[in-house]
Length: 181
Picture 1 (cartoon, rainbow, N blue to C red):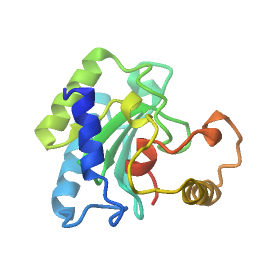
Picture 2 (cartoon, rainbow, N blue to C red):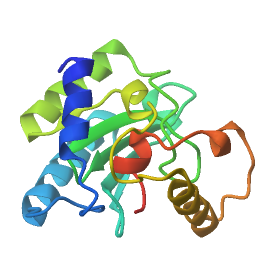
Picture 3 (spheres, rainbow, N blue to C red):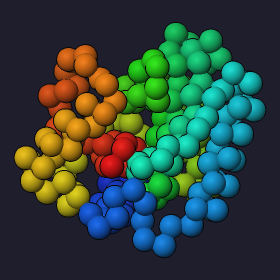
Picture 4 (cartoon, rainbow, N blue to C red):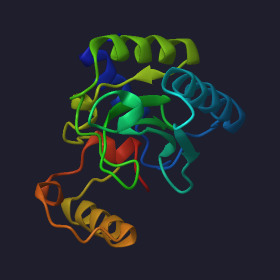
């Protein structure tokens, strides 16, 4: 696995405010093949209850969801692939969508090592959830007022009426690389 400092460096290097959803010169065919291989590997590991899909108008290419029953834990697993990097992250997400990773609670060291190895084979970079959830300090959302407006629009668009601690959090790298733009 790459060091946390190297992953942070890559996230900053690939951040481009002129290209919010995907980088310049993006190879859609290669991304589709990587994602299909990622989803296929997760389905082979966890069984046919695994679901996956693409996400238009987002910096996120796609998601793979593994129900709690298939993980053998009381938590559903979300694996997300960004259009950038392409970065991949995993965690326990909210029910009813791919959701914000809650961290790596419930992920075994063996699974994380397996996913990191798979990412390397696919030409992806595994980004641990704790790094993805760090406050965003890149150039894309440069002003606090602009960031608040974008986040408010995202919340309104998703119909997320629930108020919780996450509503008060500053933008994170998750927002940059794994959300609607």
